[in-house]
Length: 495
Image (cartoon, rainbow, N blue to C red; front, side):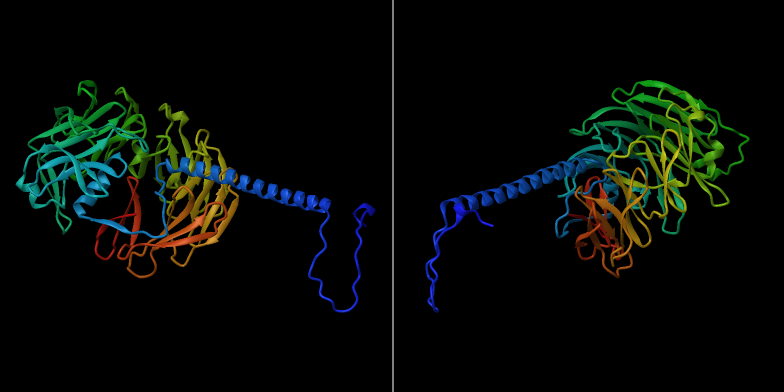
């Protein structure tokens, strides 16, 4: 009921007389409407301000995620081919060392068989600089596509920028024929060459034996050789000077029952801060100072696969029992066998990890499992069978199954959301920092090949982006999108 002070006189009119003038609204009523409008405006401004804060936080989170290894560059509404890459250049791109945005450096074999370490702007194909390593070689020139010998590697861990590359420059190589046979050409010259990645100048170099293999461990270049007279010899050199730092030798076991082909199968690589040496008799580990720290792994690694966790550097061994059971052993960082952790299943390939679930390891067997990396305690089990890979983003685990895309709470394993696979079918997961991407290939040339873009929070489909004509699949390589055709083997750079 209105107050008396707000009442006004109204003249009542008879008949159908049109009222063309409305009575004036009292001044107080106008003030009341102004306050209502002002309040509505304040609410609107508050909502806008809140949205701006949310957007700013989302932009900041996306920017942080963009710097994580494995994250795709931002995707637009269309993918186009920037340039076509030759098979030789594609091989160099795959084995290249990243020296900047869209720039790599790799061992290149020219048409005359000569070898160089060449830096390339991958977007244009332009050579930035080139360091000669080995002169012309008619034997190597005859089979440039099916020959393998030498190689280069950077000194950086995953996600870091390399400062130097270490190359095995040799004229020895193996030629692989189309029928599966191989022919080996012994080396007449072999050198370890350290190259500055700023301008390509040679920092230092020294002669190595023709059968040498190289690995970069911290600030050391580790050179290994193996023969039936001396056994395995591993020598570590300072990466900047080439000076010898330590030497390890293990005599050859003449009683070992291995074939001549098995004796050729050997190698060494960096396993975190240690050096792994493997052959048909299994694997052993040397410390960064040349001490034998693990010689108890030979039996466990004869019928197993092993790898280094790209995030932590932890060395892992996955064993396959005759019963079909699989276990993964995470070796203790301090090389104490009592600190090894054995997990059920084999590791789930995690292609993006933003560090939001520190100390968590994912494996799969019949289901997906999460474990405490330090203690081996099972954190959770989810009744899903992971597909190609998984992503760890903002405390969630994203993976595919044969029928769905699933988001799991990374601490409990509870399903946050699940959505059926799109009509394009199975594929690998990726992210561009803002959305979840499902990359669906079409290897047989039929069906739709493209990217399904989904909201990270809800799983709702945002849009689809088709692959360019003729591109069957796309992969992230050194921060760039590389596509290839299953019909023509054509390799392309895509944006």
